[in-house]
Image 1 (tube, rainbow, N blue to C red):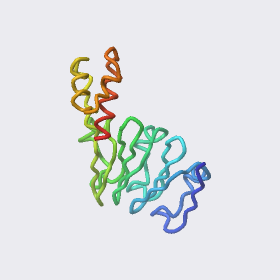
Image 2: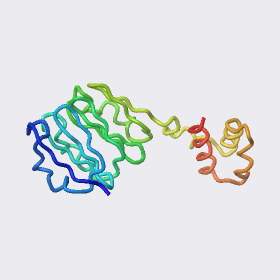
Image 3: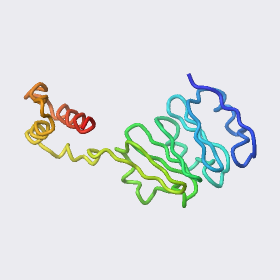
Image 4: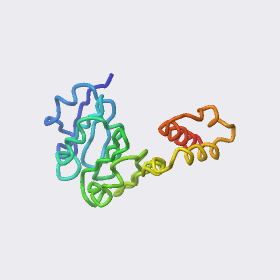
Length: 178
């Protein structure tokens, strides 16, 4: 069960959290900090922010995206990025610190597995299969790919009459284990 957050210090740097006090009373599982703001991850994947509104303490522009499904939060000095279920990334905060991801929005819609940051930039690691590459292969091609990936003949144990989704899952499993 998540906890309660208590804040103190300079109001414009996150020391005052009255605007989100009710949200911080319970259910918080993690707190992340930027230079002037905080973001709290709550049970169910909701994110609550406070602190310097002119920086990343104001997440109103992405509020709908932060209501649920967030699995992790990352930060630069003046921006946050939230990784959601399914691999979507949502960013907000100061533009020069990664708070504006519009130029790469299509790449961040799905398939992201991790996010990394410096003081002023983000980098997203994508699942190499997230572009739909496997779904373009026919069943025979998928079986051949599993054969090549599996040195112990595991694909034969999957079964020759297996559907396409099962073959894709097997390939992803082998890729992640490799």
